[in-house]
Image (cartoon, rainbow, N blue to C red; front, side, top):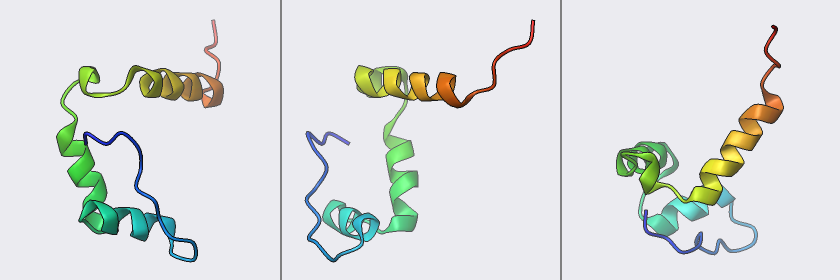
Length: 65
């Protein structure tokens, strides 16, 4: 999405709704908008990909050999 950081959301405002409003969309439209901007792993920040892979390894069940 080209963001350097997530938008600031004022205290007392629900985070999802505030973030989406700052980005010019609503909660239902956010994920399709985000998904349509990602075409390959090169579109993602490497530290995000690594963190997601670590999470999957942590919560995934160990393989049975």
